Length: 109
Image (cartoon, rainbow, N blue to C red):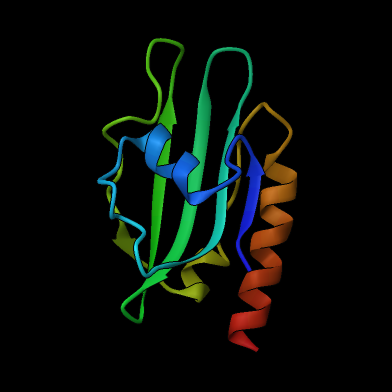
């Protein structure tokens, strides 16, 4: 089950906001997609598995840009994700952090 938080509601939203290749998430399992922004800046984390490999994509921006051009999946592990700290002024980082913690616990138990 995919968890979309704040400004992401679907894989199509992820593709659109990052301006990622249209097929970037084809065949992937998206575990968590979070995009929070406050007054003039934003942060994002997308965790997905594709072809048996776990990836994370991190993005951020100030007022003059968005997430475009930041689609750079990096191989990761659930243990590494368990050390993630969120710092965004939108308030949604608490929810994202809690959901990520649940996913890490589920996949490392």
